[in-house]
Length: 58
Image (cartoon, rainbow, N blue to C red; front, side):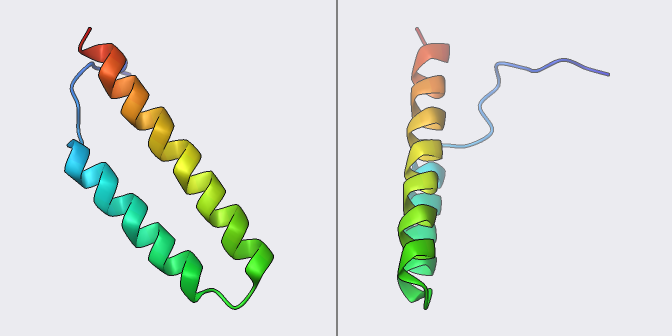
């Protein structure tokens, strides 16, 4: 099984668009607690991927 690569599969724009789409989905959710949790999780993952990508380019 091949190991991980340093190749970036997603651009910064891809990550930002995914974050915006997830926020739109969360805003449409009828449950306010679910919506808040969803946004928090997505924003965390967005920060993780952005930082990981930055570190790979150092």
